[in-house]
Image (cartoon, rainbow, N blue to C red; front, side, top):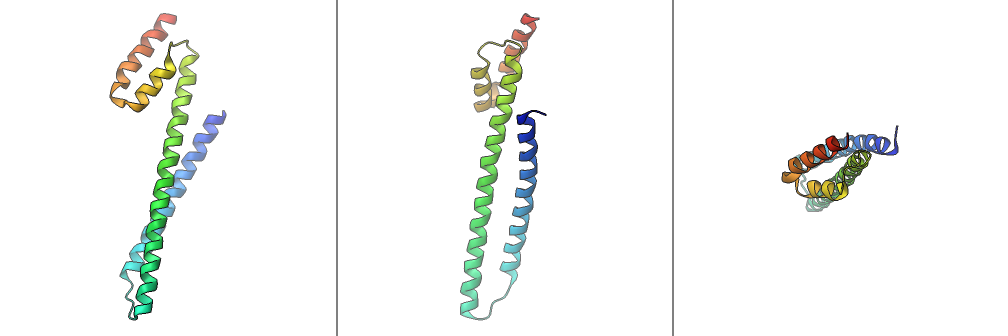
Amino acid sequence: MSNSELALGLYDKLFIQYGDALKLVDSEIQNNKKANVATAAGKKKAEDELKSLEQLTEYLTYSRVSRTLERNLLLVDGAVNRFTEFGAPDLNLMALHSFVYPHVSCRCRDQVGRSCSDER
């Protein structure tokens, strides 16, 4: 297995953990909202805990999105490396362009296909 395959496997495991953590925090938020607090001090404590849980949810979501972007860049690098083995010209630019602008990915794929078929 290559380093990128190992990294992708780790990202997959990490995303499962993010999902589990977000579910756990969401259930804790729901339980916290359902709890009836009779005293003012208890309400203040419950509100603080709810705010902390919501901040934790935001952090986990931010972290998951950041790791998703890292994983996507790793996938693009892997695709670029695979296609450069076939001698595709200017593939780095084409891969980046199709990553940033997905609607032109079909055009880039056609160019890569033509380039690879010309090399054979």
